[in-house]
Length: 198
Ligand SMILES: O=C(O)[C@H](O)COP(=O)(O)O
Image (cartoon, rainbow, N blue to C red):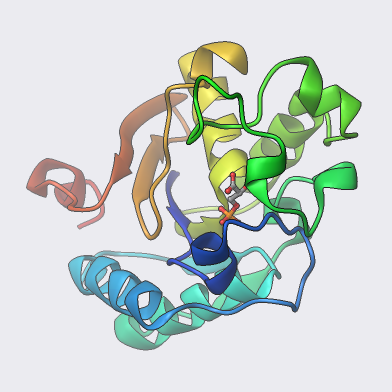
C-alpha cells in the first residue's frame, strides 16, 4: 500500500489569508487549477486504485480535476478534512501570526487557546484514513492534516514539524506497509517514486 497525499490547489481563501474549515465557502483560483493540472499530469499512467478526498470544496475540486485527468474515481472521507480551527475559523491569519515569524504556522499554546483540534486527534483521523484503503491511493487534503501525517511517519511532534511547509498541489508520498515517508511536499515527482506506482 502506498499513498500520495496532495494538498489542494491554491484557493481564494489562501490568497485572502483566511482560515476556514467550512465545507462550501471557497474555491480554487485559476492559478490553483493550473497547479493541480500540473500535478495530475505527472500522475498519468501510474497505477492508482482510487482518489480519496476531503469533502471541503477546495479539496473536492482538486480531486475532481485529478480524477478526470488520470481517469480514476473519487470517494470522499471526512477524516481528510481541514483541521478544526476553533474560534479562528473564518478569521484572517494575521490575527494570530507570531510577530517574529509572520508567515508561519499558528503554533504553541495559541493553538489550544483558539480551540484548535488537538494534534494527536488530527494525526489519528489522518492515519485511520490512510490505512482504510487497500492498494495505491491518492489522498487530497489540507496543509495541517498532511503535515500531521508526515510528522507521524517522521516520528516528530507538532513543534518539531513547524518547518514543514506543504505547498498547494504538492505531493507527499508514503510507503504505508513499511511506515516510511518517501517524499515530502514535492511539486515535481521524481522518476524513482513514479516507478513504485508502475
Ligand atoms: O495555515 C493555513 O493557511 C491553513 O490552515 C491552510 O489550510 P488549507 O491547506 O486548507 O489551505
